[in-house]
Image (cartoon, rainbow, N blue to C red; front, top):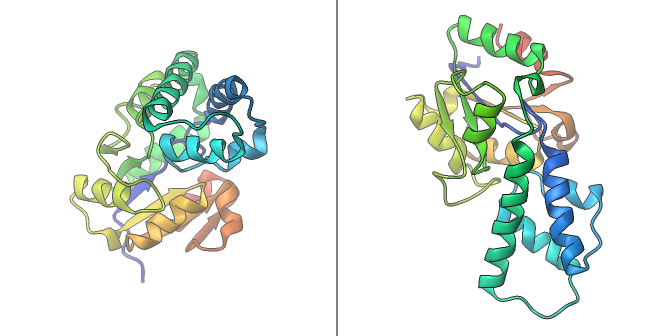
Length: 214
Protein backbone atom coordinates (compact mmCIF):
# COMPACT_ATOMS: atom_id res chain seq x y z
CA UNK A 1 0.00 0.00 0.00
CA UNK A 2 1.22 3.48 -0.75
CA UNK A 3 2.27 5.67 2.15
CA UNK A 4 2.24 9.15 0.64
CA UNK A 5 2.84 11.95 3.11
CA UNK A 6 3.93 14.76 0.79
CA UNK A 7 3.18 16.01 -2.72
CA UNK A 8 5.79 17.79 -4.84
CA UNK A 9 4.36 19.73 -7.78
CA UNK A 10 6.10 20.80 -10.91
CA UNK A 11 5.15 24.43 -11.50
CA UNK A 12 4.80 25.27 -15.17
CA UNK A 13 2.16 23.22 -16.92
CA UNK A 14 0.75 21.87 -13.66
CA UNK A 15 -0.12 24.84 -11.47
CA UNK A 16 0.48 27.74 -13.87
CA UNK A 17 0.92 27.97 -17.62
CA UNK A 18 3.80 30.07 -18.94
CA UNK A 19 4.54 28.14 -22.13
CA UNK A 20 3.43 31.11 -24.24
CA UNK A 21 5.96 33.35 -22.50
CA UNK A 22 8.77 30.83 -22.95
CA UNK A 23 7.80 30.51 -26.58
CA UNK A 24 7.75 34.25 -27.19
CA UNK A 25 11.13 34.72 -25.52
CA UNK A 26 12.86 31.84 -27.29
CA UNK A 27 11.23 32.86 -30.59
CA UNK A 28 12.86 36.29 -30.23
CA UNK A 29 16.28 34.66 -29.78
CA UNK A 30 15.73 32.17 -32.61
CA UNK A 31 14.62 34.90 -35.03
CA UNK A 32 17.71 36.89 -34.11
CA UNK A 33 19.89 33.93 -35.09
CA UNK A 34 17.90 33.06 -38.21
CA UNK A 35 16.74 29.74 -36.75
CA UNK A 36 13.28 28.35 -37.63
CA UNK A 37 11.33 27.91 -34.40
CA UNK A 38 7.68 27.02 -33.88
CA UNK A 39 5.49 25.71 -31.07
CA UNK A 40 6.45 22.10 -31.81
CA UNK A 41 10.08 23.03 -31.27
CA UNK A 42 9.07 24.81 -28.08
CA UNK A 43 7.47 21.61 -26.75
CA UNK A 44 10.88 19.92 -26.81
CA UNK A 45 12.12 22.44 -24.26
CA UNK A 46 9.63 21.52 -21.54
CA UNK A 47 11.20 20.36 -18.30
CA UNK A 48 14.80 21.05 -19.31
CA UNK A 49 17.20 23.78 -18.24
CA UNK A 50 17.74 27.09 -19.99
CA UNK A 51 21.20 26.05 -21.23
CA UNK A 52 19.90 22.74 -22.53
CA UNK A 53 17.00 24.53 -24.22
CA UNK A 54 19.41 26.80 -26.05
CA UNK A 55 21.45 23.79 -27.21
CA UNK A 56 18.28 22.22 -28.62
CA UNK A 57 17.41 25.42 -30.50
CA UNK A 58 20.95 25.66 -31.86
CA UNK A 59 20.61 22.24 -33.51
CA UNK A 60 19.15 24.13 -36.50
CA UNK A 61 21.69 26.97 -36.35
CA UNK A 62 23.77 27.37 -39.53
CA UNK A 63 25.67 30.57 -38.73
CA UNK A 64 29.07 31.29 -37.25
CA UNK A 65 29.92 28.91 -34.37
CA UNK A 66 29.09 30.35 -30.94
CA UNK A 67 31.48 30.09 -28.03
CA UNK A 68 30.40 29.47 -24.42
CA UNK A 69 30.29 33.18 -23.56
CA UNK A 70 28.02 33.96 -26.50
CA UNK A 71 25.72 31.10 -25.51
CA UNK A 72 25.63 32.37 -21.94
CA UNK A 73 24.74 35.85 -23.15
CA UNK A 74 21.93 34.53 -25.35
CA UNK A 75 20.50 32.49 -22.47
CA UNK A 76 20.58 35.55 -20.23
CA UNK A 77 18.91 37.66 -22.92
CA UNK A 78 16.14 35.07 -23.25
CA UNK A 79 15.59 35.14 -19.50
CA UNK A 80 15.40 38.94 -19.43
CA UNK A 81 12.70 38.87 -22.11
CA UNK A 82 10.87 36.07 -20.28
CA UNK A 83 10.89 37.81 -16.90
CA UNK A 84 9.48 40.98 -18.44
CA UNK A 85 6.65 38.91 -19.92
CA UNK A 86 6.04 37.21 -16.57
CA UNK A 87 5.40 40.60 -14.98
CA UNK A 88 2.00 40.49 -16.72
CA UNK A 89 0.88 37.54 -14.57
CA UNK A 90 -1.62 37.95 -11.73
CA UNK A 91 -3.54 35.78 -9.30
CA UNK A 92 -6.10 35.22 -12.05
CA UNK A 93 -3.53 33.02 -13.83
CA UNK A 94 -4.17 30.29 -11.25
CA UNK A 95 -7.56 28.62 -11.55
CA UNK A 96 -9.95 28.22 -8.66
CA UNK A 97 -9.69 24.47 -9.17
CA UNK A 98 -5.92 24.52 -8.61
CA UNK A 99 -6.29 26.62 -5.47
CA UNK A 100 -8.99 24.30 -4.17
CA UNK A 101 -6.85 21.20 -4.74
CA UNK A 102 -3.89 22.74 -2.92
CA UNK A 103 -6.11 23.80 -0.02
CA UNK A 104 -7.80 20.41 0.25
CA UNK A 105 -4.50 18.54 0.24
CA UNK A 106 -3.11 20.68 3.05
CA UNK A 107 -6.30 20.24 5.05
CA UNK A 108 -5.86 16.48 4.77
CA UNK A 109 -2.46 16.79 6.43
CA UNK A 110 -0.16 16.38 3.44
CA UNK A 111 2.95 18.51 3.09
CA UNK A 112 3.25 20.24 -0.28
CA UNK A 113 6.19 21.64 -2.20
CA UNK A 114 7.16 22.94 -5.62
CA UNK A 115 9.87 21.11 -7.54
CA UNK A 116 10.79 23.17 -10.60
CA UNK A 117 13.93 23.48 -12.71
CA UNK A 118 13.08 27.14 -13.31
CA UNK A 119 15.17 29.81 -11.66
CA UNK A 120 12.11 32.05 -11.84
CA UNK A 121 9.83 29.77 -9.81
CA UNK A 122 9.66 31.98 -6.72
CA UNK A 123 9.01 35.07 -8.83
CA UNK A 124 6.17 33.30 -10.64
CA UNK A 125 4.67 32.13 -7.33
CA UNK A 126 4.76 35.70 -6.08
CA UNK A 127 3.13 37.10 -9.22
CA UNK A 128 0.26 34.58 -9.11
CA UNK A 129 -0.21 34.95 -5.34
CA UNK A 130 0.89 31.42 -4.42
CA UNK A 131 4.08 32.32 -2.56
CA UNK A 132 2.62 31.28 0.81
CA UNK A 133 0.83 28.16 -0.44
CA UNK A 134 3.74 25.72 -0.05
CA UNK A 135 5.83 24.29 2.74
CA UNK A 136 8.95 24.35 0.55
CA UNK A 137 10.20 25.43 -2.88
CA UNK A 138 13.00 23.55 -4.61
CA UNK A 139 13.94 25.22 -7.88
CA UNK A 140 16.68 25.98 -10.38
CA UNK A 141 18.55 28.14 -7.89
CA UNK A 142 19.45 25.21 -5.64
CA UNK A 143 20.25 22.42 -8.10
CA UNK A 144 23.10 21.47 -10.41
CA UNK A 145 21.31 18.90 -12.55
CA UNK A 146 17.99 19.42 -14.34
CA UNK A 147 15.28 16.83 -14.90
CA UNK A 148 15.31 13.91 -15.70
CA UNK A 149 17.89 13.94 -12.90
CA UNK A 150 15.92 13.64 -9.61
CA UNK A 151 17.94 16.29 -7.75
CA UNK A 152 15.22 18.97 -7.62
CA UNK A 153 12.70 16.50 -6.19
CA UNK A 154 15.13 14.89 -3.76
CA UNK A 155 15.99 18.32 -2.39
CA UNK A 156 12.30 19.11 -2.13
CA UNK A 157 11.72 15.94 -0.12
CA UNK A 158 14.64 16.85 2.13
CA UNK A 159 13.19 20.34 2.69
CA UNK A 160 9.94 18.68 3.77
CA UNK A 161 11.81 16.23 6.01
CA UNK A 162 10.22 13.32 4.19
CA UNK A 163 11.72 10.20 2.64
CA UNK A 164 11.46 9.99 -1.17
CA UNK A 165 9.33 6.85 -0.94
CA UNK A 166 6.72 8.86 0.95
CA UNK A 167 6.47 11.56 -1.74
CA UNK A 168 4.27 11.88 -4.82
CA UNK A 169 5.55 13.95 -7.75
CA UNK A 170 2.98 15.64 -10.02
CA UNK A 171 4.35 16.38 -13.49
CA UNK A 172 3.25 17.31 -17.00
CA UNK A 173 6.53 16.41 -18.72
CA UNK A 174 8.14 13.03 -19.38
CA UNK A 175 11.47 14.32 -18.05
CA UNK A 176 9.76 15.16 -14.76
CA UNK A 177 8.10 11.75 -14.46
CA UNK A 178 11.44 10.06 -15.12
CA UNK A 179 13.04 12.30 -12.50
CA UNK A 180 10.44 11.33 -9.92
CA UNK A 181 10.85 7.64 -10.74
CA UNK A 182 14.63 7.92 -10.51
CA UNK A 183 14.26 9.51 -7.08
CA UNK A 184 12.24 6.57 -5.81
CA UNK A 185 9.01 8.57 -5.55
CA UNK A 186 5.46 7.90 -6.66
CA UNK A 187 4.58 9.82 -9.82
CA UNK A 188 1.32 11.26 -11.17
CA UNK A 189 1.17 12.40 -14.79
CA UNK A 190 -1.01 15.14 -16.21
CA UNK A 191 -1.17 16.70 -19.67
CA UNK A 192 1.47 15.50 -22.14
CA UNK A 193 3.18 13.35 -19.50
CA UNK A 194 0.26 10.91 -19.58
CA UNK A 195 1.45 9.78 -23.00
CA UNK A 196 4.85 8.64 -21.69
CA UNK A 197 3.34 5.67 -19.87
CA UNK A 198 5.90 5.87 -17.07
CA UNK A 199 3.82 7.26 -14.19
CA UNK A 200 2.18 5.39 -11.34
CA UNK A 201 -1.00 7.42 -11.89
CA UNK A 202 -2.46 9.22 -14.90
CA UNK A 203 -4.75 12.21 -14.35
CA UNK A 204 -7.18 14.00 -16.65
CA UNK A 205 -7.21 17.03 -14.33
CA UNK A 206 -5.47 18.12 -11.16
CA UNK A 207 -8.66 17.36 -9.23
CA UNK A 208 -8.00 13.65 -9.84
CA UNK A 209 -5.24 14.02 -7.27
CA UNK A 210 -7.86 14.17 -4.54
CA UNK A 211 -8.93 10.61 -5.42
CA UNK A 212 -5.34 9.34 -5.47
CA UNK A 213 -4.83 10.74 -1.99
CA UNK A 214 -8.03 9.32 -0.46
